[in-house]
Amino acid sequence: MAPVTHIMYFKTSSSYLQDPARLISELATKSPADKIEGGYLGFETEDPSNAFWVFEWTSKSAHDTYHQTDTFKAAQSASRQVFASRPTHTLTEFSNTSQIFSAPVTEFVTFTLKEGVSMDKLQPLVTQLEVKLPGTPKFYGSSWAPVVDKPNVVHGVLGWESVQAHWDAVSSGPLKEIIDEVKKVADLWLVHAVLTRYNV
Image (cartoon, one colour):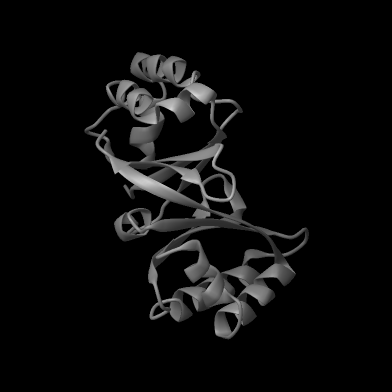
């Protein structure tokens, strides 16, 4: 089965902001290390009170099975002290993400189809982005995939040298032209985060 990436996005509690490393180490002891290939955490650059947890699971079934266990219930209880809002959960089948999540800055972006628009209008534009992005200055790679259980949403993760490097790349030229076309068929959401890998 294909690996699956689980992205959690949430408003952080004050206790998490004061000592994120301690809380992560507590949660890590309750995580199934044999089923998670990588874990990353970090804060949104646009609003540092928002945070991302990114877990790379060996498969969706491993993710789903773990969520039925008592270990998960213990981790869920411990994690409540971290959240100041209900987290959003996104599952996608990204590929080759290690360079992206390890980049100085990671861009998280979603394209949600506008009402009445089909995916065959959006997918060719995503393919064009995948073709045009390599070779862009200060770019570390991208991965794009539909969101599991949300067939109208495509999620992208992109690695950059800096937030400014991203804006410089899309402010004019072919990438801007493609994105302008995307906005005609889909609603765009994006933020950036600085992620740190940790051992689960």
